Image 1 (cartoon, rainbow, N blue to C red):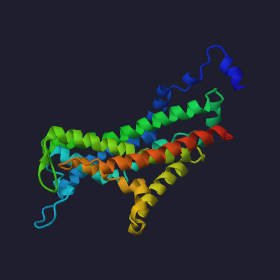
Image 2 (tube, rainbow, N blue to C red; image 1 turned 135 degrees about the vertical axis):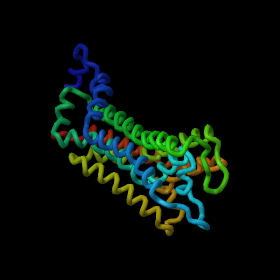
Image 3 (cartoon, helix red, strand yellow; image 1 turned 180 degrees about the vertical axis):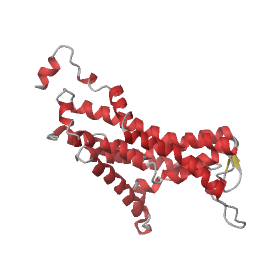
Image 4 (tube, rainbow, N blue to C red; image 1 turned 45 degrees about the vertical axis):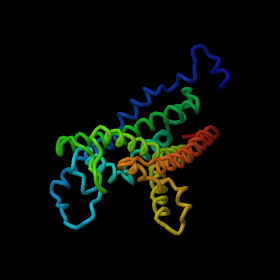
Length: 283
């Protein structure tokens, strides 16, 4: 049947299910709008929290949280700090874990494949769009935080808790590097959620499974008895981006964290394509 389709006049497998069509479909979904609204609202919630709170405690060690009101750049850095460990995991798991499983749950997956959309093309379109939405979600938070923080606290250098400050232009580049690392470190979450999405008809199972395994990784990373074995856990490097906000830029942690994340992600994406290519789709 596939040979006849490929030989049919005007049929080009690579042009089925265009990325634009898939992106519009995902953008119109309620969960996309809700997630975007929640991420955009977080900086305003933090702004209110800092406005009503009192962090002035003489003699206490200065931390990154204490510098939040120093400038817009500091506020953006703090917003990343409070969200990178868990909150930013959720949109990545949602967009990548829901994309295929939701089609199966709606019993529309088999109709897409009968359109006919080749399986590799369907997965490719959904993966690219899911990753694009995940990146947009991760970038949205610091952008809104930077704008909100600049209006509230002004534009100025990034104050470093250990002493000193980074000039605003350099700090902006460093913050961009930190966001890039967070995006790359979340690829393992994307790979895990996407693989689970091809294995189940329940979107919540794929999303929840990915989030649950991320939490498990955080728990295992807290077990100091594992010693050097923890370096093979993506969770071990989740805050390595803080090295980009130091007086001297340190690459070691970010390079190792990116390598671990990419290694897991490539394996998981390969398993998703391989398994889905052989799967008997009945839903």
